[in-house]
Image (cartoon, rainbow, N blue to C red; front, side, top):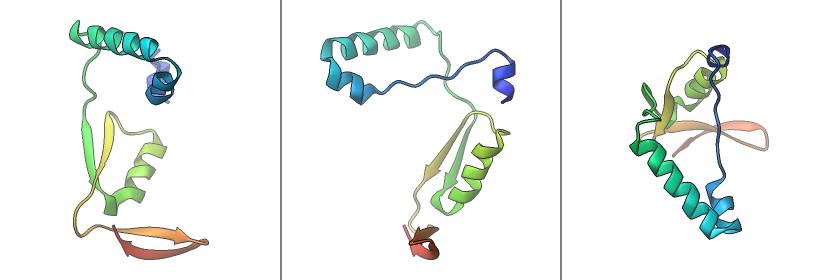
Length: 95
């Protein structure tokens, strides 16, 4: 919650929903966004924390804690193993 104490806000837009609703509006939204980025009003998210699918529980706990900065990205690797739950019973499966 610390970013909110620094008067920051976070927003998202349903781009697919906007595109389905109105192609001209979606086009204008894209154009405005690109101008915003080109003028340097927005900076890339830093740092980027990359974690494997095997670390997905750890990654979600990090997000839940609110102690991370930047972006958490999950990457698939050939030997990743994740816990899955079917009917409430966790099992180990390969991704």
